[in-house]
Image 1 (cartoon, rainbow, N blue to C red):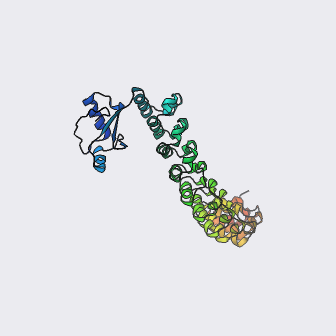
Image 2 (image 1 turned 90 degrees about the vertical axis):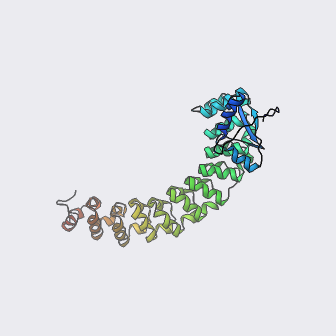
Image 3 (image 1 turned 120 degrees about the vertical axis):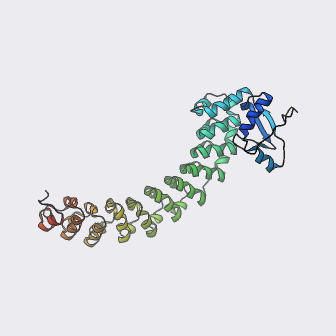
Length: 336
């Protein structure tokens, strides 16, 4: 039925969508389908909704029909079909930018279009949710009230972790975990307490070891935490606390993953012949980052060249001419 009192009867099949129903109504009443709005109770039917399901759920058989203006219908069509709806919205009148349906259609395709919406629509929870679900960073354009809404912020950070920086209030652990799981660098926007939380730091750093730059010193000095992280990203040893950089097990695990990790180990370990021999055994190429004096250590060089002959280049000049070392490296002549 229409709001002016006219009514029509139409058979609704179980699989029929709202768009299907609108097209049938267009044939029946002569109104273009894109100018029709269909409402059941307080719920407006969307294009892919199944009207019969909603009718049964609301225990009603009445669908109200509301006409849009031709201009509104045209703008909705533009927002849904234009390659870059945001460009059209920039030139729209304030009346159009104050239209909830037009703005909803725009932000569903381009979340940043929220920036061009009228102020009252940037405080509309449904519109803001649609925007941040398309682009988390659109949270920046929401009202302060909605930037403090936990559900809105959570939806934003799940889409783009960096949206955490736009939250109006300090976020709780679940929100921060969702943010760093989406984008590890979001750790920089967490509270000091959560930047020291082992699970939060681990979630961020396992995606990207460089996120440790934003972790607290306490977290970076956590041996067990760092042991796990350097097992994924050897270079992350560079962010470890002094004690961790002197821990044999942690440094060896980092070197196993990345030979350059040795240059971030403590000077004590880099100068320790026994440790360097163990390090070379797990990754011979780390020899290039050992203390220079150890490049003259015969046993260490023998271990390195036994794994890969190219490591001979890191040996001292005298050891490059050593017959046994040359034989181990399977090199016929000395390397100069």
